[in-house]
Image (cartoon, rainbow, N blue to C red):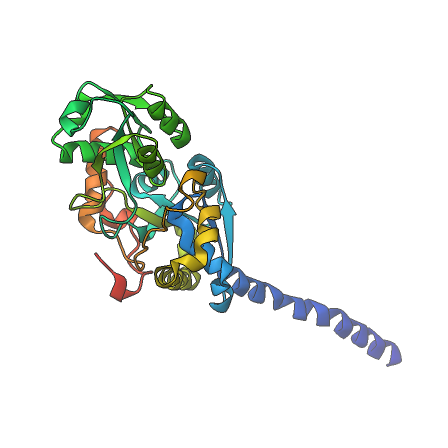
Amino acid sequence: MKIRGLALLLLLLFLVPVVSGCGSPASSGSSQEESLKLGLIPVEDNFPFFVAEKEGLFTKAGLKVELVPFNSARDRDLALQSGSIDGEVADIVATALLRKGGTPVKIVSLTMGATPAEGRFALLARPGANISSPGQLKGRTVGISENTIIEYVADGLLREGGVDPGSVQKVAVPQIPERLQLLLGGKLDAALLPDPFASLAARKGARVILDDTKINRNLSQVVLIFREEAIKQKTPAIKKLLQVYAGAASLIARNPSAYRELFIEKARIPAELRDTYLAPQYSPPQLPRQEEVAAVMDWMVAKKLLAAPYKYEELVDPDLVNPGGNNR
């Protein structure tokens, strides 16, 4: 009896850690559902996420958010494709290309571009060029980044100015700093640049010919996208993230000077603009409109980047933004 009782006691002692260990994956899984890895490149589009980090808004919302920095959109996209990050801030063209390449992603919200005033892109003529109107760009060299949102915006602006995009000589210069230098050095007649590079070019003598904040529609929506796997597994966390983003955008709007140094650092504002260039406004999370997505799809099909357009529902998840912010 003593031997049997001792054996039973030893068996119970062995089972206790096993049973208690069985509960740990559940708690770990719960923690995992509240964690997100977000890929960001150093541009002004991403600034509210850095404000949220600085103010501890993620922690207050019960989230563990890692803002993973990348120096290029290509490296960021590769990380998303590999599953190293859950989501990223990108654009509609990049979203469709990721999906075409076999990475199932969806847009969960706009981050910039709800109004034409958000996210400025400009088509500028080189300093000293005899170009003052869109029509004078015909036959001239125009620096772009081929098959990207940059080319889409350039084509849209040219059409707004009454110019057939096929009538200009497009020159592929993927890196924005290089495109800026080629423009200022007179190696390009014109170039499409986002802010703050467009503002810097103008300060150095380039002339703004077309500006997408001066037309009736926004051509350059910035979107927050996530892998579909992350959306399914971490829906509550992504919803909280969007609420935090809205809170950070509101803080910036109420007191932009409080975050001036952070903005200069995280958006990599050129030294020449640090005293004058202001942080843009950021709208609350909302969905891109169907016509905006359709316009990008039509352009991509015409460019043979897609064999057929994606449907709105294939690219956009309508269930994560607050219904009050739904702009569909």
